[in-house]
Length: 309
Image (cartoon, rainbow, N blue to C red):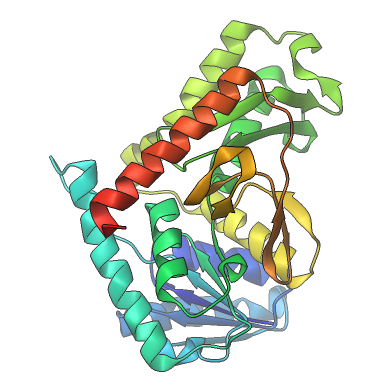
């Protein structure tokens, strides 16, 4: 399987490439970027460690490298300027993303390709890709709340001193301020979270607050997220490549789940070789259900503002 990473010269794209290299599952990694020196340098750096990782083909270049890719991962994006509003940043990133899609359409892509959007605002851009590209909606997915979910699980595990892999709690909704942690179904190694020793409503509230601010904290301290988002990207790509049909909170077009429609947002999604293969509804607390529908409304309003659709 070949994966092309558009924005492969940047922090997120290069960390994703590194995670894919260490995963050893995909056969070819193509790094695509407008900065040729930077992307060629990233590819060289990966190649130099190839004998210690896995036998993969690693190349760098332009949009033509996505022509025969099985998964096209788009990570390119702009960062917020000082005193810039969220809407202004969204408008700039939508313009950049539109240009990327135009280049992709001009270069061509396989009809079986899966397009995996990581660039922010991920839910809005996933919707834009779904509208602009001639692909079935299920073949276009966004990273959604996969990163938010692993942040929440990891920080909860740290607070209660359990292995992170033993924590089961998921975030639905927008990758943004209106995200919805689903505490009603949270477990520690199959045990109900609310009955686990040391867990209190105050602790849950503190962990949730820290998760909501964790992206901004990483940006403030090191300039941007890299390792965790790279691992999250690789997790989704490996799930597709291996046709694992795992349930992940990726962003995809909704047509009725939880009362959501005509919006790309994260709900439990069966992910496999065909992309977002189906959605699953589980019973939620009424306040979670209401928060998820509000999250959908927030995204629909943003889409109307920036896409006019």
